[in-house]
Image 1 (cartoon, helix red, strand yellow):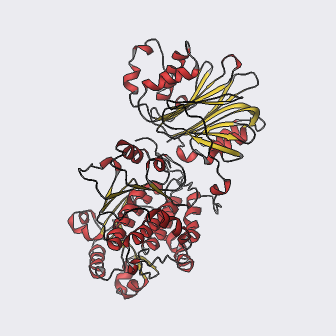
Image 2 (image 1 turned 180 degrees about the vertical axis):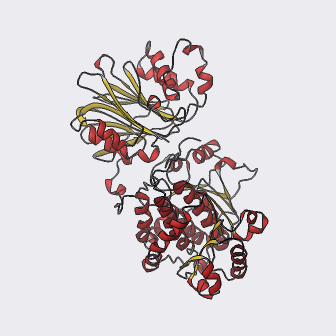
Image 3 (image 1 turned 90 degrees about the vertical axis):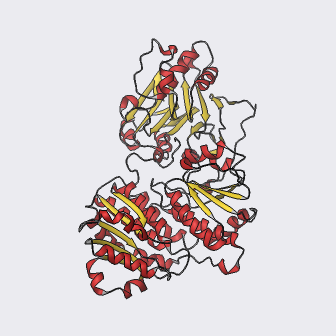
Length: 593
């Protein structure tokens, strides 16, 4: 969940350039941040903040530079977000940054090896550093880290610097938690939690495998592992990682608006998707596994796959997955925006043979999940910086719909119509209305989002967005189920967002459910197709808030509701003056279970 970025070079590197790279990792955690620099006197100098990396830039003089720097942005696991728990941790000539969790922390702390040790922080990171310090007294730093790695359990990646006797070195270790080694064109050697942070002047990178240890000095880089492999750099053109243009002060808002270009043009990815899916034998059953927004995308995919491909489909959260006796002719679809989601990666790694027929949907070309999957599809929508999923969610449901059409083999199901730019512009034209409604509903502490058919997964996703960025307790539920319990919560003030579909088979019962709700609460926000709204009784419309979306008789109709609700969630949070791009307690990449 944390972000690691370190640098070692023959020539001094600007602290501003270093912090700019570190800030690219801030989405991984932002409880605190810190950097340690080797100063002109060959001593460590540390800067720490409980604010954002921009605050570190104010603490460090603009002209400061160094040949060795290690930085960290933190998502707290062991110990509260405070300065004493902030990384990097320093003991003598050693300094350490860490991402992960030492699962046997409590047991290890009782070990006699720490009998006379007084811990200065509450972190498992300090324990790792103290183990390294103890072993380093009679070993090289590489061997000290090898011994330490055999004692700690869990998913962990860390980088330790050593300035003993003037022989500056960085040694990195990785198990499950992602870590990359990068070589810059000027000879600078870096470690980073992702590739994006080290892209500037990058010559190539190496993805550390489990239990890899890499030692770098100003002269060379050496890989230590059981397989005796050498470092082979992967070269990537920087054009693959073009930054999206930020059209406002909020990345999340920019990414919502960016969908106006992404969605109408998404079929440009069809050939790449078809090339992958055509290799897959049509399965008898599909299991989809995802967390958060990816799980909600899976719920919608279930509807697509069962309707278009006639394939029974189940959706699971990885923590609740049960292994079956028979996995014959099953396809397992793993969905993760980053490809590093710990819950998902741990599941697929736990029984590789069982999940041998696996397809991963990830928004990059290289990740832990991709390496474990038989097939993979890149969502290809560019880096998403807002912690709350927006454009990655819409791309997931488009890819999943395309997969359902390819597996169908029935030409009648092969209509791949996506909402046009004109339709999407009509949705955004409602933004002034959405702002007014957001102001009204931002005052509530609880609300329901209800939908049926393809709108149930959208209701779940909307509720998640509202929780994530506006801190309002929201629940997504099937509108057909309200009489089975939820309606007990409704009083005259209880707010309900109600989504009506355009499905002919259920439209009348959906309107009946709407009337039942209107008779019990005065705060109803309806989103429905234009033709449905026009047919509703004027008296009903006078009692509620509503937005009419364009009529779109297609599998991709859910996207119309999605865009309205993403804008609604954003403006809810904006009225409450909340940190929309980086909500409290969250991180973009969940690398611990």
